[in-house]
Image (cartoon, rainbow, N blue to C red; front, side, top):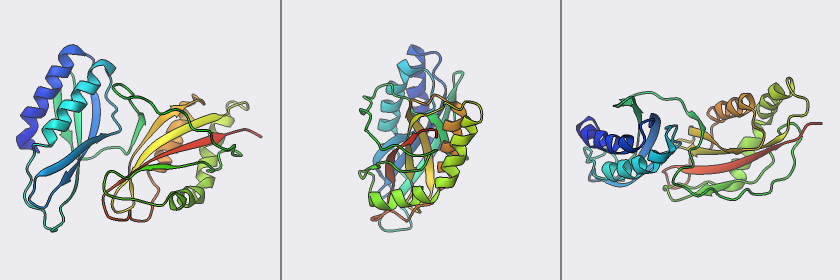
Length: 234
């Protein structure tokens, strides 16, 4: 990846010229074919500030990553490679380690999905619908996803109760997007939308989601999940 950083730098410089405040982290994934070429690339959970330039940076980076050529994977079927990039103050870099939880999803350059109605849940019980994006090579049954989340109901409730300890009238809906890797671990988690508007609860639950483990996705690859939690006091 270091060999291609000059191209990544050009992407950032062009976007940063139009949006001088463009800075933060951006996590990218690449599907590497058996011959080492990249057949697909995507970004997950941008935490890059400077909304006006984010879409331009994302598009340029996506094109650049598709030009990357890796050594041939040891496995005949290729694989998936992830890289985190840092952009800020006119400088760029790659980070070897990253935080799974990425705060709120940037919606610049994207149309937000309409909110889905979900059933009420007592003090954060994980009873809600799940949708998955199966375009990344893996798949998991929605009921399997729900069952894992329900198993962590106590932790979900604890995060909500942290907010209730300060505001007894606190309630609302928080939707998360998280990515399940090929080994079943969660590699990114972000708030898609929130009517609760309580950072303590949102961050607590986002960080908790990062610790969850799911069955390995069928077919390999990753699964991107959108999951809403509805919280009501009482």
